[in-house]
Length: 112
Image (cartoon, rainbow, N blue to C red; front, side):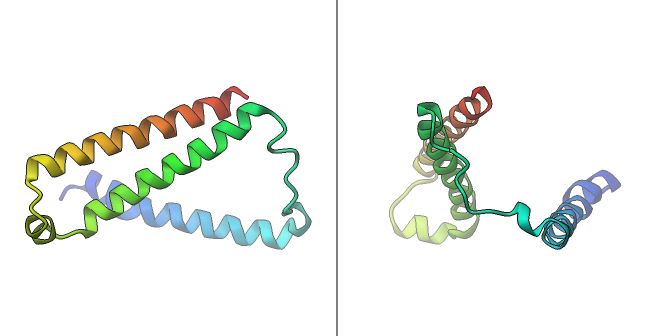
């Protein structure tokens, strides 16, 4: 493991989490009234009604697929009768659909 690997896969994730948590506490302490549950006319335009759920469901599917791919042991897929090729084909197919939904949803959100 070289220094670039240590930086990218060890230090950077912890730094990202630390910045996120620090920023959340900072914002809560100094901008309490900036946090609101009002919708701010979020679903006023038709594009938002399509883009927001599409993006969020797509990103949840991408995240869920990665978590399932990491947590499901190989002997479970073997006992279910799922070959490695069909597992890979299913993962690529569902991942492509989820990624396309996420990409299309974020594109519409940026467009708005």
